[in-house]
Length: 80
Image (cartoon, rainbow, N blue to C red; front, side, top):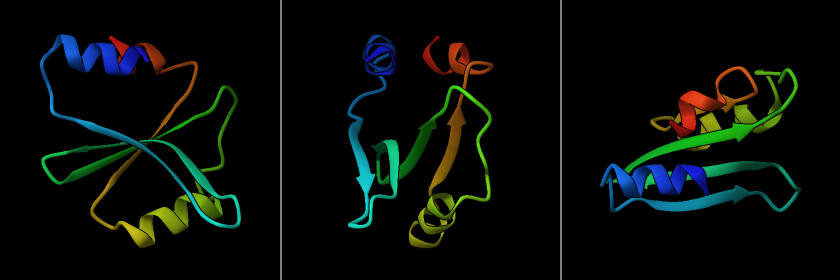
């Protein structure tokens, strides 16, 4: 919600928000689509395995999309 508030305040709209989940349970927590560009975010409190099958599948499915992992070290940059 803080991300939506930030983008609304900065008038970076229209941004569409989604999540991505496969039938077998792999998921990306937040996907933003702005002017045909996809940006995806995975939220983790602890260290995250960047070689996970989910990230590999996402990158293969959407090769031009950006993917960022948001954690306790960088979440303020994400919402401010």
